[in-house]
Image (cartoon, rainbow, N blue to C red; front, side, top):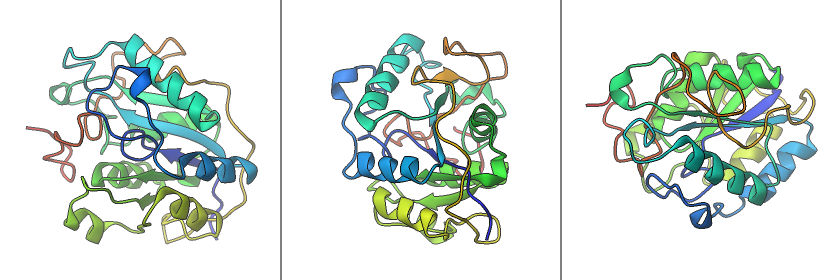
Length: 233
């Protein structure tokens, strides 16, 4: 069994209800069972993080400050996660880290001090699964109304809800490379907080020149035309 050291969560549609380009903390609503699922992960001693595409910044619809405030509100409601890493770029930036590319997963793993191969990503669309796969991490898909049937068919593991996905991981069926996953784990939350740093920069959340771009979940899943191929129209 492959050891799992960290669970990385997509934000919109996975941890919190999907509100397109949300910059208002008052509109943050955790999905049912999210707090309980995270409590289980923390109790098991696994590290936690969020990997989120936020192209509203690159599109001029959101600011870094708005994204940070939304992340802070979600972090408070969910009991605290080890690191929040987001991609601020529009799809046309063609960066290396926007999901379905692996940059967010790799950066979150680095911040948590866990090899990417010891992480499992939970998300609701193919971009989450493909980013995990590209980073060498495991993945569990939790379908929502936005998930396409072909995405479900192609996923290595699926779960009907977030709580079930976490229980699968803790039971050792995490969809890791070779269908592996263990409930062991290294430590608890890392040093970075809910400001939602724009990878790979520090806690101010300012975008770096090669930081993660991305778009999949931040627009109500409307800009996902190329989840499988990595480019948006």
